[in-house]
Length: 421
Image (cartoon, rainbow, N blue to C red; front, side, top):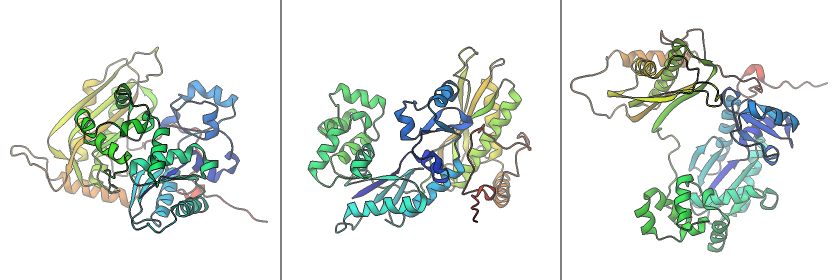
């Protein structure tokens, strides 16, 4: 059996832990630079505040409906997530951290356990130790735990935050309840193709011929179908496996129409990607640089473009990646356009100790020891003290966060002070 533990409205719940005045009230959390709504409490959802709503368009609505709007407090959310995941590690040795607010657990050898009682214990301990409410779905496969978790979340008062699919009757009933578009792993394009085939619910998908699914789609959809049929084909993944792509994309605090500011930002993003590459002991074959104007301001000249750079041999050097990124952004920059967002993506990743060498070209051998020294110093001083010359030495990345709550668990200056009399 597998379990999926999902934190309810995680970002909003983290804010409520340290500000009980927000309990029972509508709360919305904004994206980087206070751009769009990315998370909200159930109370805000009931008011029909849409996900992705640009706050500059919906600010008056939020004020009229007394919705508390907060900036994303990622240090707080990351720390609270780590606390939840550490608690879950005590319930099973096999844990896959799927995202910041949910994890899969494989329950091997739990045949004689009361799974409902065990799930209740998980929820109670997480709530008591962190203040974060959760829902738990338990089923024979990972895909079915997703279905079970949605059922548990749909009516917490009745389900008490727990749903267990442990019989064929429950599996069929759950799949007939689940719309095809709500199935884990089925996006909008796949949803349309399946609906054209007559699939309205997840149960309809399981009734298709497995051979047809494999022929018309891929092994991924075939495994998903088998998982929904109760045959486990999607294993628990290693939580520390390397990423296949690394991206640093940000909205600027202001719009920029000069190339110098944009080159500095691109160089900084590239340096961040290179550092992440070295942390996971990988090198990249390709670099993608993105640049776009503010799509919300239709009256302004719009421009959005990206360019791909292919390296002659894999690299993890900040010097090589940043120089290539700056040269790339110079080719796509257009004079007169006010740019709001940029990004650097490194892909085609390979292990540092296993890749094809190029006979006729190679990277400067001094780069490796130099990068190692820079990383060591930056780790020691807990900040990017060592930067490239084309980065602003006095500038750290600062998002617009006008509604930011304190970092209660990660900043000594923000720790709550309790006064007694």
